[in-house]
Amino acid sequence: MSIFLVLVGLVLLVVGGEFLVRSSVALSFKLRLSKLVIGMTVVSFATSAPELLVSMQAAFDGVSDIALGNVIGSNIANIGLVLGITAIISPLIVERDFYRLHWPMMMLLSFALYFFLKNDLLLSAIEGGIFFISLCIFLFFLIRNSRRSLSAVSVGDEVDDALSRVSNFKIIIWLLIGAAGLYFGSEWLVQGAKQLATSVGINDYAISVTVIAIGTSVPELAASVIAAIKQEKAISIGNLIGSNIFNISSVLGLTAMIKPIPVNPETPEILSTNIFWMIGFAAILIPLMLLPKRYFISRGNGFLLLVAYLGFIVLTFI
Image 1 (cartoon, rainbow, N blue to C red):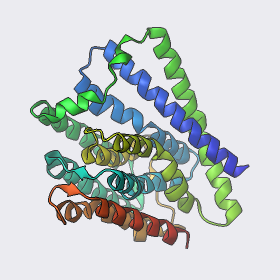
Image 2 (spheres, rainbow, N blue to C red):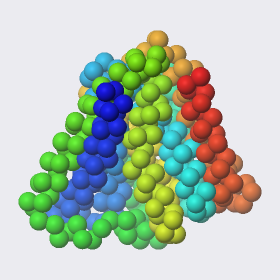
Image 3 (tube, rainbow, N blue to C red):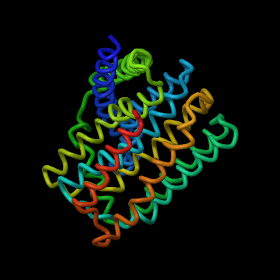
Image 4 (cartoon, helix red, strand yellow):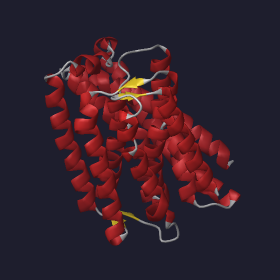
């Protein structure tokens, strides 16, 4: 029954997230927002909705391991699994904004998360607010820089123009479907994960940092793999890493603002091991970007990322 709840929960999260993205973009067109702003803000927030709902549900249920493990595991999966597989299929050209804006912001938030948690074993409402404010500042500079560069064209191309012609009735239906899918999906996923952890004799955190993290990263993985197979030029390492920035600043930030997230003393690996995996996967991108070819993530580098991620999964369960 626990595996059934986990699988159904993941499916509902994927479906709910997809309908939320469609309805949010369609509604944004009604509000006359530009495609650039929609692509960088509305879509980014909507695609982070599964992680956000799972973390909030876990925090309200008193399962802080899942709230933290979901984000830490998703950030590791986005680089090791999603970026690794994408680069194996189609090597990636690294854009200037990656090492000037995306990567420094991801590293700053990753270290800030570690120090906030290490300080008093709690991510407080104030610290969550700091994360969310930092996201708003990041988006301001991101949109300003994109308006000055050619990258604004690729960002706009990711937004479907057909959604501008959707009726108000259909937008409401999509919003309801998305909200219902995310609500029940997150609730069943958290409950199923707790039951699964108990039945197989491992802690909630191990399940959240692997099974749940991979599940909530499925939309990013599917979109990236499809784009890589089609050889689409819009594939951007900056967009993939942007998901990690949103996970910490919006998912953990908003969750902590509503319900502070404590570190479970029974799972010391959160601060002793796994958060360093997250920081390590983020840091390794710079040398991978420079070797063997500058500003390029090769198939070989993608393979190294994937192997490292598989090693992380094995060590987590051992």
